[in-house]
Amino acid sequence: MPGLTHIGIAFLLQPLVPSIPIWALLIATELLDIICIVLMIFGIERMPTKEKAPIAPYSHGLFMAVVWTVSATFLTFMISNNLYMTLIIGGFVFSHWCLDFIASPMTYAYPNDTGKPILFQNSRKIGLGLWSSKIAVIIGEYIVTLIGVLIYIVWLIL
Image (cartoon, rainbow, N blue to C red; front, side, top):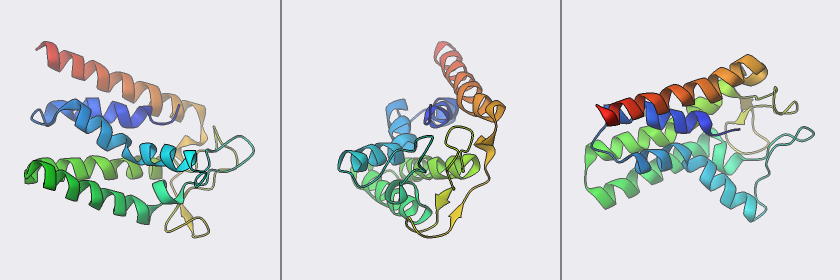
């Protein structure tokens, strides 16, 4: 289930930035997926399947990830006027692309995946390909998320 790792990272790192609400960190880490869903609704991007590679250059390409990060950073500063929060939110937004770069191409789940585009759909694709094995997916998606949620719960209790 794509996206769990990003959620896990938000929970894992929230104790390090306690002044920022968890909902803001969750939105920041999932912003690229939220944009992707909106673009899929309008038929601009396509979810990957076993037979077809994903088409998501406007939400998950490197260039557009930078555009979305800068936009979210600017919007955060305009709303909060808090430079610390602004930089943290911007970092969390861009962390999504960084994690996807490590995971892509995600050939274990999507055999035709070719990686993340640098610019747009027909540009060069990049990625380290960690999601090419079942064990990597289990560790990345489930173990990281479970550890993040557990650390967050313990932090709340203490």
